[in-house]
Length: 194
Image (cartoon, rainbow, N blue to C red; front, side, top):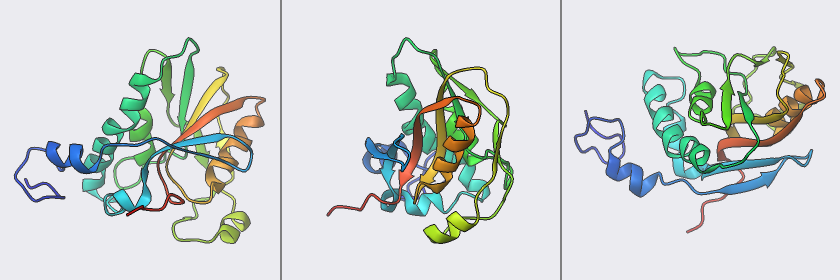
């Protein structure tokens, strides 16, 4: 097959040279309105075209590559004595897989235990391309299964306004638990610098 970035022949959807050259993650941090930190690894413009594969067969492979380069690397370098659980935000299967579950899966280490099918939106409205007002008027209405652990990491693929992650944090707080921080593949608010 051909690399979708450089079109050279490769065994992966993105060749190792392009992964190294174009997809080396960075470390970006912003705060939600509730004060919780969100760590992201890419500027939206850097991987926008790859994100568009989300609901396609190819998207599974692209999200796996991005997760290996960013989430897995983060987890391997995240050394603490505390144990954490990570929850994918709305890991409902669409197009044969869940993109947030792929990201969450790559966090598995000695101190992070990914949990699946725990935090689901009851409102399936798409926020893609919608305004902040639209998002406020159409809450996701998350439902969270009972949690036993205290240290929680929330996982999502894209942060735009922070509405989804803020709603997910509020649902966790209903169980008298706190979100330690959130991880996101990309942050739309980060602008490309030239």
